[in-house]
Length: 222
Image (cartoon, rainbow, N blue to C red):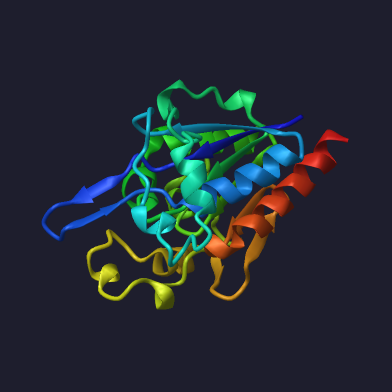
């Protein structure tokens, strides 16, 4: 059995623009189902700990027509996250950064998270992220001062499909920043940068990313 640490945004509120965001339901719950069904353990963490803010759009009929993820959320599956400062990276075989626009705010430049990512990576384990989840990888610096994704093949949420008007209030362009340091693809659903780093494009890539992660974990555990 492998241990996977899923990292969620604690949430972000922009009163000036009447905008609130956080983590995205499908991007946690779809991988959680796949990882746990494969016999692995998934723990949850966020910057503030406790119950992190969900992006409510992710459990709306538009994005969750059957109400599956809404039901999982309301059952309390993500109500108790540990604080990032309490995480012991050596306990984990993989770190998985959940998307949602919240990741752009409180995860991207979070130094505690960067240390966790680097520790997991240095232990020879897997770093994974989906949608806006790759944001903190940009600022996770290796000993040479370069980003952990520098020169690697990656994906993440494309600029072209951001909700209308939203890029103007986001702190940065994910696609723009990733394209500066890595080989960014807007088309591929799941991209391995090397045998330790894998990224997924959008919510609809969550299952495919989790399946790739499980394959990699199973291969290492055999």
